[in-house]
Image (cartoon, rainbow, N blue to C red; front, side, top):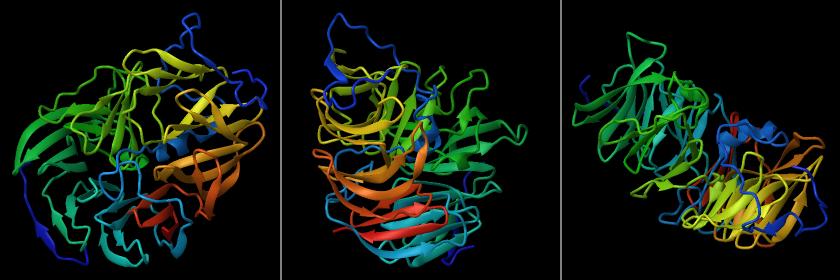
Length: 449
């Protein structure tokens, strides 16, 4: 099955305003102005951004404090200098997902898991028969196969260890314990269990209803801040939700309301309810309740008291997390993308087209704008630069085509560099020294300056 040895470990069973007025869309929020209704997270986006929903859900990312060479949302020390292409690789099997695990680029396909050197693209190891369903905390790697088997793979050597779990759909690990979603043989299509296994013994087992196939997600589950998050579980009695959150100690499902569980980036997940959202960031001891805050695709100030909120009508506002007071509010429909160094990047409707803007979060002042342009994440960034894919918007909606990956100075909007991206690009992974751009049939590796 693997190039490495195999061991065994058994466990028990808007109307537009003047687009030339950069300050026009924003006004100071006052007590006499109507307060936007709370946004319902799973409603479809505004018509002019609806075409990108699938891409966005697959690529949402945030950023947090730099505790290692790579922050949980792709924050690194320096992405200002132009990257230098080092290698390109066409894959023999479509890549479903990619991640950086223990300094190795790990790709999963339908039948294989591969480890690649981020500096050269050289294949370091190959595990066959276990593809498409893997989880990682950036150092461990656990994968399942189509027959319900589960293994732990050493990212350095590719050595795989059988975990002895049967009927497994997904497996994750936290503090030495395994968490597994297994299929119920008596209810093979919708029935299952979420289990916690410690030293070979099942600590608790919670019956669950299985939802959408996990191949639609970058990772099928995660254990963060003492909570188990997964998009695989649904509530058949509730419509409009997908996913569930469980207490890692007891196995209790924490919300009776329909929610959306979304992986925003490596080690960052969110649960989205009607009037609230909660962030789960790997390395944080507690989840962060975010009120009705709008989730961003990249956010290096997620602990800030400046809460980004979008209403059902697309009205964008910044509120004080502690008091609920609104600092300012937009008049045009807007879609927030990323926050970095006190600057918010968002897309604002200007009638038949849309404009990418950078604005000062503290005041709503527009710093720069680029017409008919969308900055796509997944992204990586440093303290002043954000790197993501630029796509040109066509008149009347939709994309005119895929563009390069660019590095943008968020304060000025200046494009510092660009590199061609494989198509259709779905992920960016980094170890802090290299960037790897990932498309289903091709990977491109770059050395960071």
